[in-house]
Image (cartoon, rainbow, N blue to C red; front, side, top):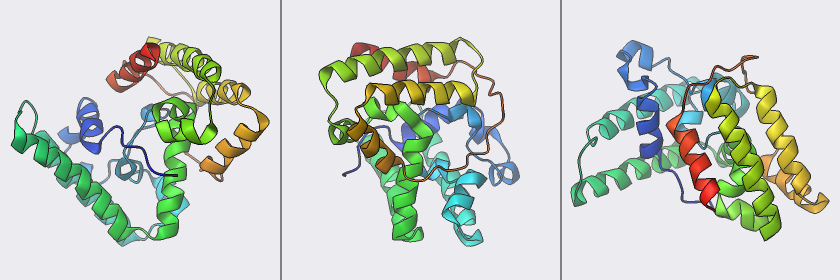
Length: 224
């Protein structure tokens, strides 16, 4: 299944800038990892690799982990330099930032690690990927009626998480509700896309702040 061309690492970094990721010192930045609050939100694979639980699942070597942090810091620096700017040169640099992520992944991860990372991407985003990623919807062969049901279910979940507190159990409830919309064959296809569960080390209660990325996702789905 081909990969979707959707949110770029640049746009995601801009969202994370609001979470003060790039405000840390160089020493702290080297230890930064994608926070639990981003679960359920489509995320650039390089940023997912900053999480120790994902690193453990992929069995990354120390040199790979060091390279991940170095690359995130460098691409974030480049992204910050584009804030508030427009024009052809800016668009070229935006593309270059996304290409730099893809190039790093291709050069530094094995084929098996890349395949597993794609599975973890879908697990992290969860049921929202059924609508946010056109290739997933096509692969599952969602009917118009199923799409409408998923829009209602996911929109309601997004409204809940934007109101304040949420927990990993809320994300699991969304997953269960979305799976109930699928036929048995579609559920098997979805399970094949996800692969074995990644053991995300989540806190039992995830405090939510108003997340522009989550709000944008909810508004997008409401318009479908």
